[in-house]
Length: 57
Image 1 (cartoon, one colour):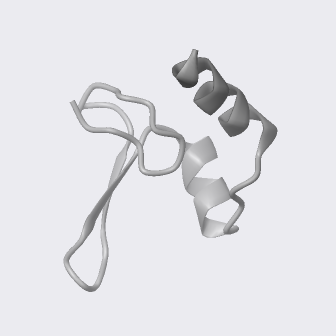
Image 2 (cartoon, one colour):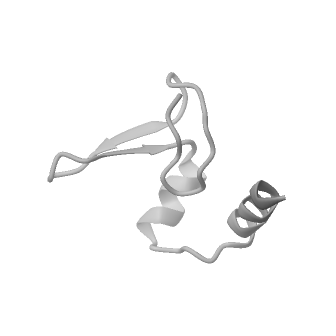
Image 3 (cartoon, one colour):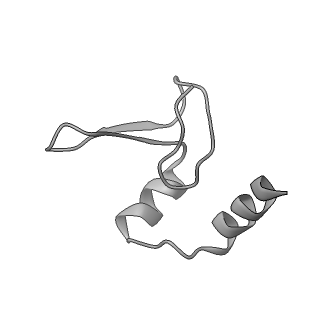
């Protein structure tokens, strides 16, 4: 199962988006929400910090 590079969520391979960059690296994204926020270079988004906080507990 791939892991989203933006929010860290694991998802099924047939869902989501796989980006292959010019340097050959592969980025997996679980949703268009993650893709749009990554392209806008947002990192401090409230819904991501809640997921990270819940993982630590």
